[in-house]
Structures are given as structure tokens and as C-alpha cells.
Image 1 (cartoon, rainbow, N blue to C red):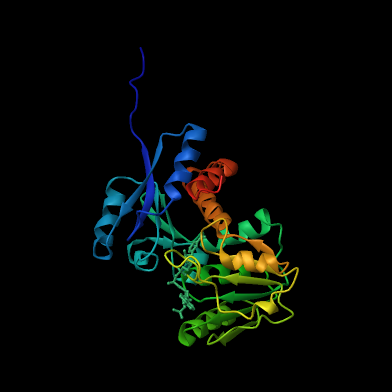
Image 2 (image 1 turned 90 degrees about the vertical axis):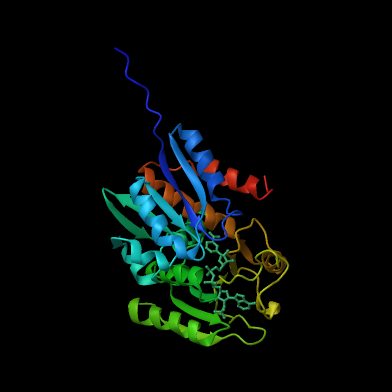
Length: 287
Ligand code: NDP
């Protein structure tokens, strides 16, 4: 007797608003095809007022997990059964994993950054002095993971003093790393003893893709590691830093590795990293 074929697919995806230009699905489609998995990644427009219904639908339809992007990363906490320690510390979730009938919140943004830094660019942040521009969701995730990874010192530089101070206080009270906050109200001079500088702001994001963080660029010296979270293979900020002899790390790697971590959490399988990287680079016209 021949077994009946199964046409069931495992579902994952992303909830966001607006989400149409989110390229993550391309990377997952390539990974599922590479491994021959009957999985599908859906890019789903969910308005803030509909998040509760969308999360209930996720449970009802047995999704294996979901990514959350702007504006759902904090609001989703009310719809989860459990948080990973890092997600609890950050107060934000970008990846939900179904374990049995429980939904567990994780945050892979900072871990994706850290993996791109250590594995992609071969930079070890342990004991290093780090300056992070920004104090929003991405900066928070990156700062927490760098602190947990053993950074030597973290300085938060942010336009809004309240938000910047809040992140510096979080790091000072919940992690062992020495921390400082500098209000950002004019060209910022990168201290000479800085090893790693991270643009974790939205400066450089389309439609203002030509914008650069307000820095005294003469303080970017050869050998400084300069990272940008803008998800692109190149930005004007990284080009300017590279021209001054800095080692540059783009935000595409962060996006690839946060996807790689999500793939592994959802499927329990090793992710085909080169295939995912190539798919994303192609989506950005860079391969
Ligand atoms: P948030 O809105 O939470 O935070 C934005 C941050 O940028 C704040 O610190 C804000 O400062 C600062 N900022 C924005 N505009 C300016 C400006 N003109 N001058 C100075 N500071 C500014 O956004 P997220 O943290 O979620 O996202 C930030 C960036 O990270 C985005 O570009 C996003 O695309 C990117 N990202 C990349 C990922 C990747 O995988 N590569 C993953 C996640 C995010 P203030 O507090 O003063 O408003």
C-alpha cells in the first residue's frame, strides 16, 4: 500500500507594518529550497490594532514561529508565554518560536550583529572599548549582547538624552560592563581609545540613504572597526570610514545572521549560510 502524500506545509514568517519591502522572506525561501524542506515564509502586513488577532491566528494555524519587525517588537510581549533571558533584558522580541503549545520570545538582532562581527569580520569584542550611536531597539539589542559577550566599555551616544541614559542605566545595572552616556547634539568626536564604533541609528535608511551620522570624521582613524546596522551591503557612512582606513562591517551580515539564528531555532537544522547570504545580497542588487 502506498502512503497518501502530505501537502501540509510548516509556516513561519514576519509581521510588520509596513512590511512590503522586508527582504527576509527571500533568504528563507532560498534556504528551504536548498534543504528541500516543505516550509513557507510569509511576509504579512499586520496593523498595530490587529496584533492580538494575528498572534491568536498564529497559534490557531500552528505556525512554527514568526519574526516581528517595526512596530511590533515590544507590543508582542503581551502575547507570549515565555521570554529568553536576553529578550527579557532587552524588553523586545524579534523572533517567536513555538515549543509545543507555548510561544517563546527571543531576540536575534543583537546576536546577529555579534555573529556578523565575530564570524563574518573576525573581530573579537572582548575587552574592547565600544561606542554605540543610537539607543533604539537595534542599539539596545546590540549593546546587551556586546555587554554579555565581555566588552571592555560601552559608551552610548544618542540624540534623545532620556532614551540614551535609559540604555546606559540598563547596561550599568544589569550587566558587568562599565558604561557611559554622551548626549549627541553636534559633530561627535570618537575618543582615541575606541576600538569599535557602531551606527545603530536609522540614519542612512531609505529614503534618506545618503545621510551620514553627525561625526567629526577626522576622529575615525585607521584600524578602528566601524559597523553600520543599515541593512545594505554599503552605506555612505561606511564608504567614508573605509576611506579613512577603518575596517568596515555592513548591516547585511547582521540581517543574514539574525535570519540564520531564526532558521536554526525554528527548524533545529544547520542553516545554509552562503545560500542565505547570496539570496539577500541579490535582493539588494549586490551579487
Ligand atoms: P528605533 O526607532 O527604535 O531607534 C532609532 C534610533 O535612531 C534612535 O536612537 C534615534 O534617536 C536614532 N535616530 C534616528 N534618526 C536620527 C537622526 N536624524 N539623528 C540622530 N539620531 C537619530 O529604530 P531601531 O533601533 O529598530 O532601528 C534602527 C536601525 O537599525 C534602522 O535603520 C533599522 O533598519 C536597523 N536594523 C537593522 C537590522 C539588521 O539586521 N541589519 C535589524 C534591526 C534594525 P532618538 O532616540 O533621539 O530618536
